[in-house]
Image (cartoon, rainbow, N blue to C red; front, top):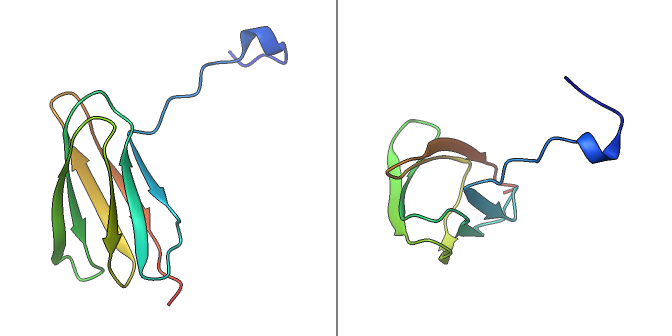
Length: 88
């Protein structure tokens, strides 16, 4: 149940995978915010795989890539999807 009392606000769930900037102009950074290693697969708008990266807990990596992508990430206990947009 929602409340206007600031002491009863629900804790916001931390994103597992951060992408910055989003939208991007050809380069962006992936940041693994989880406590486990994740595998990140990136797919283009036609469903083709563009890259696959393993990121350890707390690790970040800069990616140079054009176009909008869908990122699918998986770990032992987590999985999810992020969409990133290109401004080119």
